[in-house]
Image 1 (cartoon, rainbow, N blue to C red):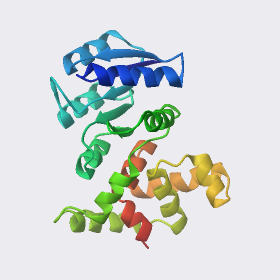
Image 2 (cartoon, rainbow, N blue to C red):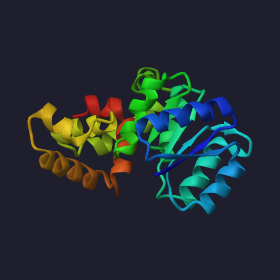
Image 3 (cartoon, rainbow, N blue to C red):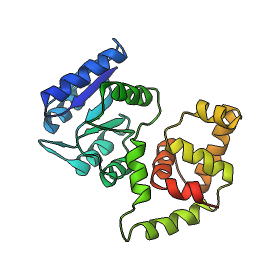
Length: 221
C-alpha cells in the first residue's frame, strides 16, 4: 500500500516515513512538500491507500483543502498530522471526514499505535483533547447542538447509546463485545439499529456523530 505523506517540513516527512517502515515493509511512503504536489501525486498514483496530511502547508487552506480531498478522493482515508491540538480544530477536522488526528507532539510509539488502528479500519482521535471540548464547550454552541442531539439520542436504547459511545472512542467491535460480554455480531446489530434510528448512512458518520455528541451519549436517557 502506498501512503502519501504531505507536509512542508522534510523532518516531519522523514519521521513519518520511518514510522511507516516500522509498521510494514509492504508500505510504500510517497512524499509531497505542498498541496499542489500532493494533488499531482493523487492524480498520477492510483494506488494511494492512505493520506497523512498537515493542515497548514503551502497551497492548503485547512478545511477547504480537506473538503476538496473528501470530494475528489472519497475512497482514500485521511489522517491529519498537525501542530494544532485545540479541541475545536480537532472536531472540525473530524466533521470533514478524517479518520485520524495525530498531534505533532506525539511520540513515535503513539504515532505507530494510531496508524496501526486506522490501517486496520478503526479510527484514532486524541481522546484527551476531545474530552476538553466536552468539559468546556464554546459559549452559545453547546445548548443549540445539544438540544438537537438529545432529541435524536432519546430514541436510542441504553445499549445502543453505550455501543455508539464506545465506537466514538475508537474501540474495535471485538473489544466492545468482550467488554460487554456479548458477541461481535450482537454489537453490530445494536450499532446498525442505532444508525438507522439516527439516519446515519455508514460507520464513518456514526463515529463522527458519537465523537461530537460524546457527553450526550454518556448521559442521555
